[in-house]
Length: 170
Image (cartoon, rainbow, N blue to C red; front, side, top):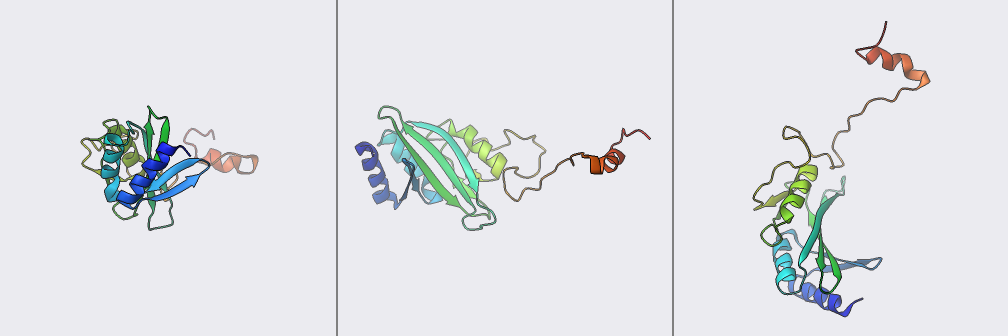
């Protein structure tokens, strides 16, 4: 591991009680949801992580606590370092603080995560749908979101499917 990255990780582990996870050479720090903004501010201001390249989430349903992980992808361009942050969030009222004031491009990423997963970002200046229509109900990337589909027509069910079509010929 890069010595600079090791120092950054150790600093965050000491200051924020972060837990380090290493998988295939990628380093992830597990942090408390209420520390997200403080960790990001420290990374940007003091440790050189000047780029937020994405925010996403994972739904671990039917696991309830934590149901979600909000994931932040950060880069230090001058040092060529990458770091992930993960914040475990409960299924009931999933909320994390916004990092929009630290990384302005977080606004759109946070809107997307809210739209798809229903995770709220406290303090976001414009938390509204960005991908789905405004009148859409629910959050489609949640694992418990009801799936709607059209039954596929095969030879064994062709008559049944044709009977359901409003344009079926008699």
